[in-house]
Image (cartoon, rainbow, N blue to C red; front, side):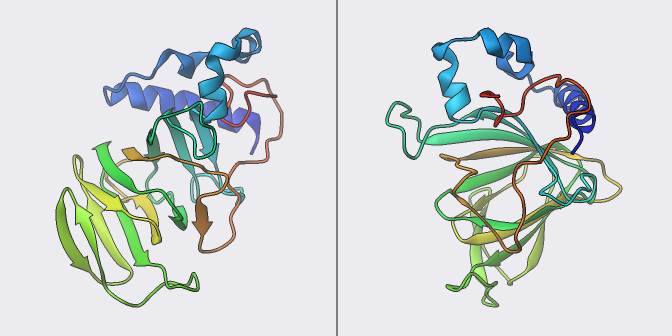
Length: 224
């Protein structure tokens, strides 16, 4: 992705989040120059990859396959300095913009439609060999346990949520014609480097062509 494209996506996402009535923490708007001057008191943000995250999953077509995220809080699976056992994110899904099929090995997460359009989500249970299981399974929707068919596409309107346990494959996108969706994610500790299993091989963080200076750094760039 070009840095100019990422900058445009971030500024648009920031405006959309504000429009939806959600206030981001101060570090959301720290400039790269400010990050260079900040000391070890901000290591929790750096080490646990809080902040902005934009990905096209290596496909080079962000409007079709991609996601914009902001990690608000997170702990660590390996660093005893960080004792939080939970994480929280915001995600923005565009109309027909697919987040590819994947599951998590250890993370349990609630995916919440915080506002905007309708979120569609395709769900499968993983078989032991990593393939999609054809068996029906049960999922919790806002505390209500339901049995669903393998590959069911469920609808989350604003305010609704689903709990995704480990080894549940999921892909999601905003329903066409109803606008993009501001998604909340509340989960156990998040580790995007080790805990994602994509059904088909994907990139996770973009390769960036530096055609202009960054407005804000991404969560994997604080050490640059």
